[in-house]
Image (tube, rainbow, N blue to C red; front, top):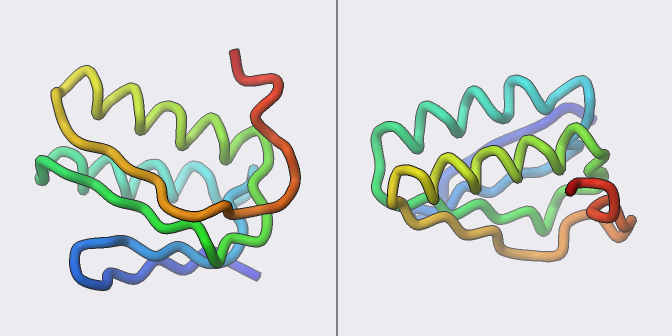
Length: 88
């Protein structure tokens, strides 16, 4: 399944996979949104895979938001796999 992003009441709902194949376009899309908004909320409840590349993309978006004094939130559990262990 490819990555699908929809907006619902200011929250961006992501479904599919955030992985090596999709993480670059995912990050580019949300980089643009962060540049034009003060707040970004991403719902990952419908994400069925997040690999290390996807987790890094989320981490980089978080860092960008912090550096630019913007609000950044991630809602949901996303993938049940633990992918956050090697991100430091």
